[in-house]
Image (cartoon, rainbow, N blue to C red):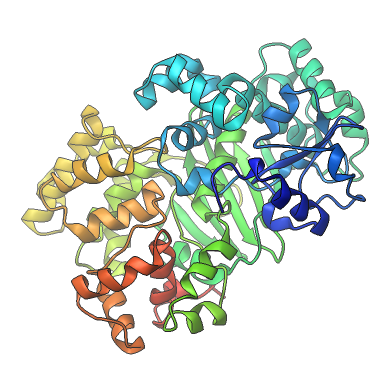
Length: 493
C-alpha cells in the first residue's frame, strides 16, 4: 500500500467496483450525485466513475458535506493501517486522537504531547487527511454516539455527554448532519437493541481485515495472563483496563468475521478510548494481505505463511505496564514472570469488582510501584536495579511510553537504562510501541526456529537475511515463534 492512496483514482475505482473489503478504512468513496460517502466494499451498485471522488478519512467526507451511507456504515470500517505502521507526526497524532486526547486536552494538548506547534499539527493533518484534529475528533464522537444509541437504552442526554459532546444540541445536530437521521430515528432503525443487565456494560463488534488467525494472538495473551488482571474464561480473553475517567473490564471473543467485545465501564466517557486500546491490543487495523505477501517472497517463510495466514502481533493496552512486565520476564519462564507480576498486583494494584469472573485488580501504576522495596522482589540484584530504575523513570516523566512515542527516541532512552539489552528493547518496541518492523534476532525461540527452517541462526546473519522482510519483521517473529509447541501459539481450549 502507498501513502495517500486516495490520490490514485484509477486504483480506488477498481477497488470500489470489485467491492474489495481489504481497502475499507484506507479511503472513502464520496458520491457527488447523492452526497453520500461509503466504504469501498459497499454492497450497493457502484456509481459511475465520474460521480466518485475519494477522501482519506470519514472526517474529510463530513467536512465536504457528505453523509454516511446507511447500508455499509463507513464509520464502522477498520482503521487505516497507516497509523499503526508509521511513526511520523501524522500517524502519532492519529493514534492520540483515537485515544481521546483532543476531547480531554484540546488541540493544544495534542500538539504539546507531540512536541510540535498547534499550527504545524493542524497543517500536516489537513494536508494528508483533509481534516484537522477538531474535525477528526468530531467524527470519532459521532461514531461513539451512534454506537451508544444503537447498543444501549440510555437516555439521549446521557449519550450526548458520554460521547464527548458539550451540549445536547451539538449532539443532535452532529448526528443529523453525519447520518441524515435524528438520534431517535437512528435508534428506531436498530432491529434488536441489546440491553445489558450489568450497569455500564456494552456489547459490540470489532471489525478487522481478513484473514485473521486467532491462535497466536489470543494464545499469547492467555498464556502470559497475569492472575487478577487477565484471564481466559468461556472462550474469551478478559482483562481490566485503566482508563482516563475510570476503569473497565473487557471480554474479547474471536469470531469468524469480527471480534466480539463486551465492555463494562465505570464511566461511559471512556468508551472510545477503550475501543481504541482493544483494537491496538489485537492489532485489528493491520493489513494482513500486504504483510503476508511480503513475507511469502522468502521461500523458507512462505510455507509458514501459507499454513496459517493472517497472524497478528499481540500488543498491549498499557505501554508502561508492558515495559514493567518485560523486565519481570527477563531470563525467566512464562510461569515465573506471571508469578512475579501477580505478587505486585496483589500488593500494589487497585482493586476492582468483576461481577462476571475472577478479575480483581488493575495492574499497578508506576507511581504505586515506586513504593516497592527492592529487597522484597524475588529476583537477582541486577534485575531489581533494572526494575527500580525503569519505574523511577516512568514516574518522574523522564521516560514516557505511549501511543504517541517516537519509536527511535523511545528505543534510545530504553537502551540507556541499566539492564536493557536488545531483546528487552525490541520486545517493548514490538508489543508496546507497536513498531511493525521490530525484530528479536537474539530470542532463543527465534534462533531455534531459524535453524530448523534452514535460515541463518546467528543474530547478525539472521538480521541480514531478515532485511528482505522489512517493514514487517515483527510479523515474521510471530510466524517463526509458531513453529514451537509453546502454549502461546495455540488458542486455549
